[in-house]
Length: 128
Image 1 (spheres, rainbow, N blue to C red):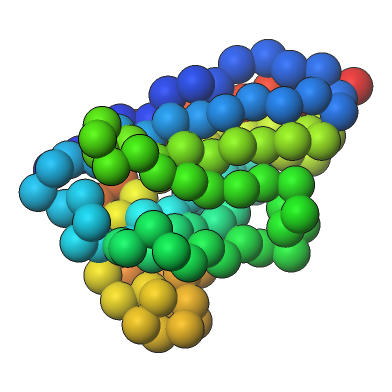
Image 2 (image 1 turned 135 degrees about the horizontal axis):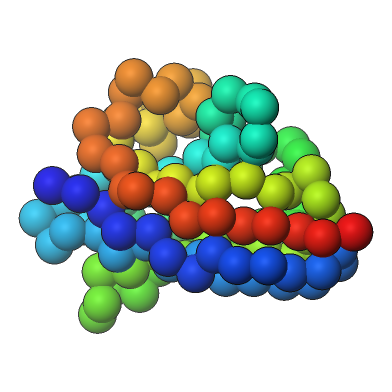
């Protein structure tokens, strides 16, 4: 089972970009899904997540208010809408799925070993 991330590209400082994550039907609506990113030379970090029902989201402080997560049930796709991008948002963005993130009140969201399934990543470059 693999998720498929797409939508990355080059965008200017202050611009917007929307990433997509195709989630396999067998886990869509069952597992919580999150976005991580890895900047050049840095470790991969948690960005945000949406719970299995699509009703609750959670974000890291650096993107809260700029990024949103939504989903389309008909296509089993999760979206990461990124606004007011800055060069610090540059990196490879990954989507991943895990069980029990929302149930843990998101305390498990940042723990990468909790995630059972991962996508291949999509590169986002924000130019200054």
